[in-house]
Image (cartoon, rainbow, N blue to C red; front, top):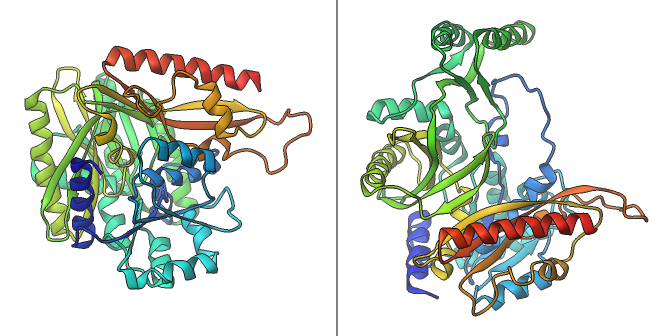
Length: 462
């Protein structure tokens, strides 16, 4: 194990559990915000969650965050060919505990709670001192911990929900004097009405406004408004809903849209004793508010990075005072005038960038890295061996320092129908997560472009 990796692993375990050698049971309950948002009133829901089957199989990302002595609970076991590929790169893999009878529309935690043999297997790890480390802690993860007897490696669900609210982010950023976009917190319809009156002036002046659910995630629960007529339409819809339901409470923020040069994501860790450690900063790639990946290293000056590191210390100490410990990811941005806005929202949970951290010591020296995803349109399930053939010359192989590393294969076939049509006409959307490693940004760009072309061709050939 590289020295820097051993240091990262030991430091993380110490922060989460108080000891550097505690075995962990990882749980990739991605988009835990869905649980935190239950019962909260935000923007009117216009669309349903359509890609849940794919999102739920992002649980496989945890496979490459866990260490050799750890365990990871997955909705189903990874393909043997995929595991052999990862091992060929020198990646020590954890023990896999796969649930029985997974439902594509359930999270890995929901599946696990229905699998008594798996719960019993977790219970047998109690004597080892293992702890469950979820992507984020909700009531469901607390229930799994209680039933298995394994404690959580993180704060309780009430604390996690509280500090993940975008209202919390705005409030403590104001308290700490950190630069953030102009905005307002709306905890009631009365506050929202007042906010609409104020931001109507911003819109009249040609400014753009964004409305965000306090627990929204991945482009859902966010609405960009560019004129007062649109704002008033939303307000009327929300007034009608409040009248119909009798609920005046709200969990929403209204902010001015800031023109940006780059989205940023930085991570720090709050230890159980309150010590704050800055981990990294990356450029975040987004499209319509939906996370697409990261670029490393971030193209920032030393002064801009210093601004983020100082913000992390302030935020971390406040989070610790409010009872939180664990991993924290903060969305920030670099304005067109190069001004740093160090707090857009706080994600007091694992983040997509967290799952790349264990890989970096292996593949990132002085080169460049792009963590991204590739869409696929398929008519039948794709085996990893077939993908490997399609990626010939691009796949990161043993002995190579450049190429494309697949860090989640489960999402490729997650949306495949249980029974496919005999003529192969059933179309479904897949998603391949990968890390593109190059010696220069230009090389990474070329590899990414070639990979996208290959994946498009792969879909058309099937």
